[in-house]
Image (cartoon, rainbow over all chains, first blue to last red; front, side):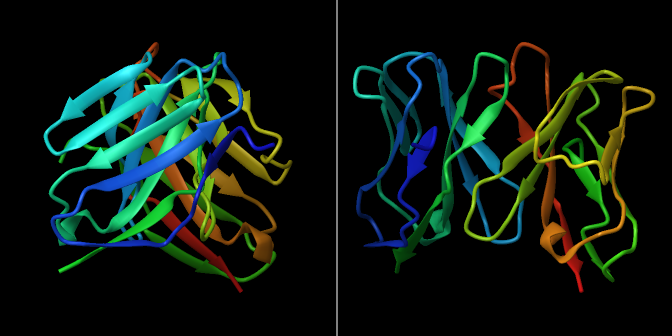
Length: 110
Length: 114
């Protein structure tokens, strides 16, 4: 089992819809959970990080962590065509390394 | 621009040649990381430095790969005797120590080995 599993998509939704992106992880010792956005041929850009279970909101983005299920989610409200990108979930191990999921390609249709 | 910068952005080389990439981190960041990303995959950790000390190397980093950060500022990643399997995006990131969850990435160097 991979340490971080993420459906690669692609996921296509109409503009204005709520987008739900998800990952599962295997090691209950992981404590930090991150979401990165990556546009084509660019480096990843940190969107949000969370430490514990629960929700964290930043504008149209909400990150959710459920440690009991080892499940992390990113919700995007009022999605825009500019949100079209690959979204990478990531976790930080106890020795400060980041393990990324494969990324989900998201297309917002105008 | 005070973000992470990488040079060159693109490199095409013939199999067997040596290549070197450079990364300039955010100036206040002590930690510097190198990753490799292939198509359809997330970035994979290669190595990281705290100041000039290389603290960890992945098993992905074969003997043909070497990274340095001589003065604790910029870093170089060298690949000797390149192989076609080395074709990938090489990403650099930086962070404060103790804040590895908050890494900032550069634009990457795309390597194509022909």
